[in-house]
Length: 142
Image 1 (spheres, rainbow, N blue to C red):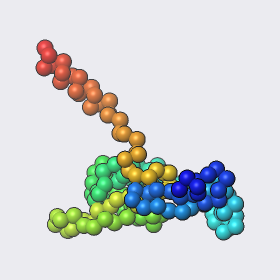
Image 2 (cartoon, rainbow, N blue to C red; image 1 turned 30 degrees about the vertical axis):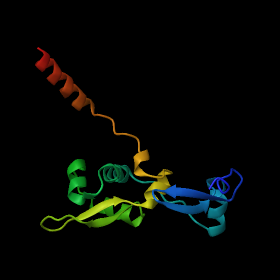
Image 3 (cartoon, rainbow, N blue to C red; image 1 turned 135 degrees about the vertical axis):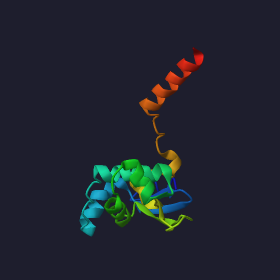
Image 4 (cartoon, rainbow, N blue to C red; image 1 turned 90 degrees about the horizontal axis):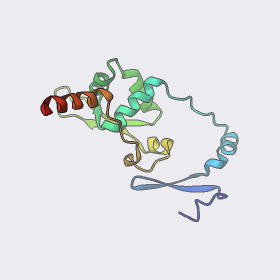
């Protein structure tokens, strides 16, 4: 892996959880795109980023869970993220209606340039939760 991942090497090896993948050196990505006549994907919308974050931090999740967190219908966004290969179906929940479960893909890890979900930044505590906790501590202390 060290031999391939040199600065001047054309090919790098990337670890994605328990798998390894050979890919072109990011330094040469523009040349590869030009040769293969590839266009850059359009960036994700704000809704796409929100849904992706919900799935990444809570997976496996149902569409209903994502919609409960966001407060709006997410069918189109989930379909778009699935088409882009960032999330995938991970089976069905054992409840009435057997809703689909969603989780992230190895492509998600590759796009974020991380090797596992454990490398995601920790979620910040919400200020409201911190205020409620300190208010409860004040009441119990008094």
